Image (cartoon, rainbow, N blue to C red; front, side):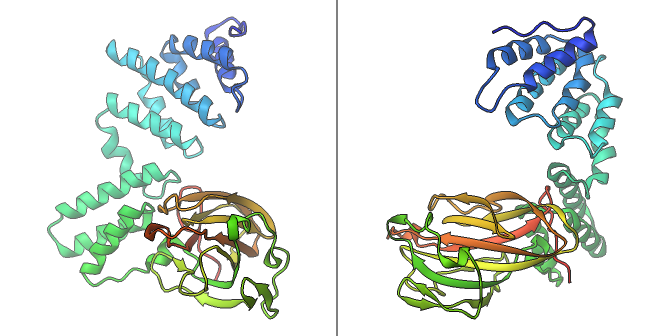
Amino acid sequence: MAAQPVAKGPDAQVAALIAQVKSIGLKGEGYPAAVAAQKELSASGPAALIPLLKAMDGASPLAANWLAGAFETIADKTLATGGDGIPAKAFEAFALDRTNAASARLLAYEWLKKVDPTAKDRLVPGMLDDPSADFRRLAVTRLIAEADAAKEDARRLELWTKALTGATDEDQVKLLVGKLDDVGVKVDLSRHFGYLLSWQLIGPFDNSARDGFAKVYPPELSRDFNVPLPGREGDVKWEPFTTKDDMGEVDLIPLLKPYRDSLAYAVTTYKAKQGGPAQIRLTTPNAWKVWVNGQLVFARDEYHRGSMFDQYVIPVTLVEGNNEILLKICQNEQTEDWAQKWFFKVRVTDSSGKAILPAE
């Protein structure tokens, strides 16, 4: 299937080709036409650059990647012929507009630097509170470098403290916390990241043959902290637990026995200052399910695939006031040393990874 005929005129033609690329389905529907449209877009002139950036907003990951590819092809060709056609001022305005898609803003910024070497020093200092984690990282990196070059202790402290206000990446935060700790300034790391520390726990329940993941145990239906429930080896009851781990880790192995072929539930109440979109960021090496206010929001039935920082990012909608977050954490039968892990970490953030602290 060839690309559909497009309207006359360069602007209309580019718009129609972009629409063709964005129409590709999640399962590849419209693939041949989208391929043809992307190829034709890549042959466009620099006038198509800004429309391509704008089109990335709301595009599927596949379509956004193709649009970015067309953008880079055009920009490369334009730069190779002297770069006069690259709209530097428009790129800067686009990159600074925080309502645009983060990936498109970053693309505009990277190309702006190629034609305007002063852009980095001019723009990055204002990115410390940017909603894009990529831009904030640039601003934090700059402040760290500035602190390293500073000769006065007070100035270094000022710069490290300022950098921490925008840092959300684990490596940058820990670096800054370490530098501040070295000069006697203590940082509450779990609060900075927004980890939820206090939970009600109950278990273990049976997960033999890994059947427990799909089985509905009583805590999924209702939660009365005063009522014991039949567990794997007799009655179990809800127990309050507050982790003291700086990174919010709740290790279930020392708390619940036996732990192999077992599962547990954890519940907490998160008080939101206002309702709206947020993200629950979960780290666990175990199979899991997450409910928010009684609604299952995501689940993953796999074991011991790692436990990286912000391993799972789950979009949710919170209500103003109290929000119940319920976890189901399942451990399997494996006996290898590397499989003896049964824990979770949970934090609540905005879309850029910055902590949304609960209301006091």
